[in-house]
Length: 338
Image 1 (cartoon, rainbow, N blue to C red):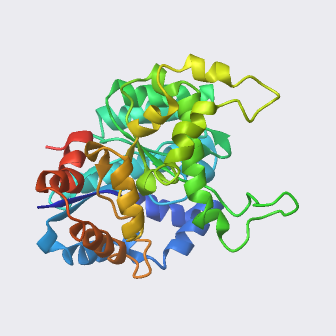
Image 2: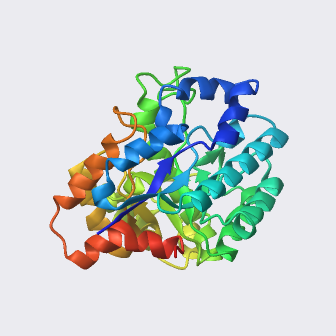
């Protein structure tokens, strides 16, 4: 048995150092993240990973929050993307026994530059996929300007890892200016991911790019738990809306909405919740579930979610071929690992 962690976060040194000396949001993020050394200190990263040597544990790297597009101008975010992607590629090349791959990040606030960086990352920097957030500075992913980015991923047969992005500036009630009590994270992030998935489905994006592969972080967010709403509920699309005819949307799709949601991939990063894991295992096909931890954002700043997620999976009875698929074989296939 081995474990390939498909969704966890790290900042390569060149990008981290650049963020610390930059003006504005990038520097602020760097200061705040200093409390989590595992996300930027390679020695600390190795110390955490070494706790799981007996599990044959390896990682596929991605940058941490926030999205690059929120950190500056197109020129700045393009530079951040290059530094991040080249830094990730260097780590994978230098430490293949620890980092078996990485997913590239893009300057999504400049879609033309994002397309070019995606192609460069795939063809020159050996990226195994893309990390894209659930909205682009407040814009939905099905905006036409972003379609060429998804098209590029499909062209190269590389997966897209969908990461939630939502802040306190999106209030929960109309009469308020911000979301209180970190509701924007606890409940807002799963909603944000689910909404992005729905926009990809109903916009026809998945029909236009039938070989596109999208992994929805945190076990597909709300979708498995709301199977009834996603299934028979969405089969009645339009019956709750009087100012437009949404039945035309259903007619335009090639499949039932429920089937598109089943096409997404999902990961086991649910913070050690056995109930959420079982719900996701019931909803998604075995070959669409990947082991992931979301390290290092646990209370222990590194090992906690890795340990808890492994413990949950080891405590669930399943055939060995299914266990192997979830723990490492699906990652090998999806990310084309050798």
